[in-house]
Length: 84
Image (tube, rainbow, N blue to C red):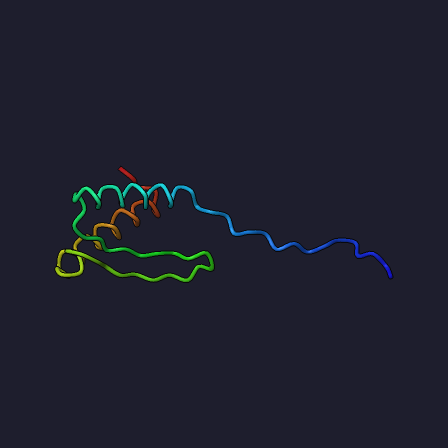
C-alpha cells in the first residue's frame, strides 16, 4: 500500500477571544443591574447570523430601533474610515 503524500486534518475553529471578553464584561454589568436590555446581531463561524433583543430593549422596540440605528451609523463610519 502506497503512503499518501499528505493527510488532511480538520482544524478547530479559532475562538474569538475579544468576543468572549466583551460578552463577559457585558454579563458582569448585567449582573450588577447596570444593563437593562440588549439588542444584538450575532455572526456565527460559518457566516450565518441572527439578531434579537431582550430585556427592556425587547419591551421597548422604539428604543431598540434607536440603538440599532446608532450601531448602524457607527459601523458605517468605520466602513468608510470616518471614525471619530
